[in-house]
Length: 488
Image 1 (cartoon, rainbow, N blue to C red):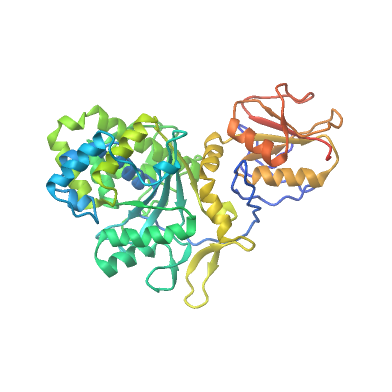
Image 2: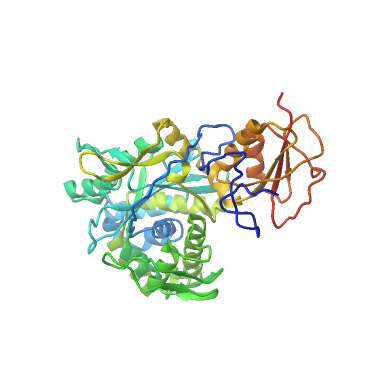
């Protein structure tokens, strides 16, 4: 079997690219079943190192605060609510009414009638950091009650946009900061961020929530730490310190592990771990572990009966967490996700690997930014966000594909390879010598329904229930087999 994947198969040897096929290393594109819009092109470059203070894990705590502690915040935090719920001036009795209305289903969320609720999640360094209000993390949360799913799609902080207020073109992470610096108000800063993100994503973003670096650590510590299971031992030799250098090597041992706020932050944030833990996929899994561990610990402690921890958490959120979602809406969001049993989030990122955004050095100031790649438009980028659920499902399934052909048509093989690999899927070439077939076939060795559906639509294939003849199948090394037939 011939290797065509830079990542390699499950338990397989080191990969290489078939020189006869002459394929570039393809880059993920939007894998929508009904929309085929991205035809990525490899762009080689050396990206400068970035030291992000916040990652998805911090913003995941924002979602946790909304979804898990929503009811508590609405009923126990009246004296702190003006700091948490920004841009809203309500009397004490109005806040009580909000809580009652939310608890008994008298509130609806913006977008709920259209089947999708969107929230912009922001992470900032906070006081004590350089650029305390620059959004090092920007994530669009899309919640679909009809299918009981939610997805988180990251916006790159270096993406070049036109800011409100006639400030010209800047990196998107400056939108929140400039809004705050001008108005000294979290609500106005949130408006600047959401308006800017709406132009990029094409989505209506009526809500925002922001949390800072210290809030994440304090929330974990107030719960007495969290317990996670480390899948494999790894070490990060490039974990940034509070300045411009690195900490001593950070190591996590395989097995159950109790983490305080600082270690939980390192575990979720690590970007350069060895032993297979340096990828975006591995980091996303670790972030999910921390978020789920926080949720589990919060329920185990039965926080509603612990006034001490309630007051501590509320104090932390009041100082480090701000949102324009009112208490009744938080109640509704909490109940909605519980009713629809939304327990996990799909995730994806608008980064260079999509083939949609490419690096550029600005001539006037030498700044390193991301812009749409040659041949790509704002519509392509907006479609990426509109298809985030399909992208997230493919990433979650993470299948290994064996691709073969029953003909000598190298062009069609190369086209199919680019299409499948371009969706971020692992692809290997497999030999097929049973003679030509009349149509493209897909066979699922292991159930990967979203990936199979995507391949069927993109390659125009028919799914079969019996394996292709003449191919020795190892279920530990392949999930889907695709055999190309004669072109009609």
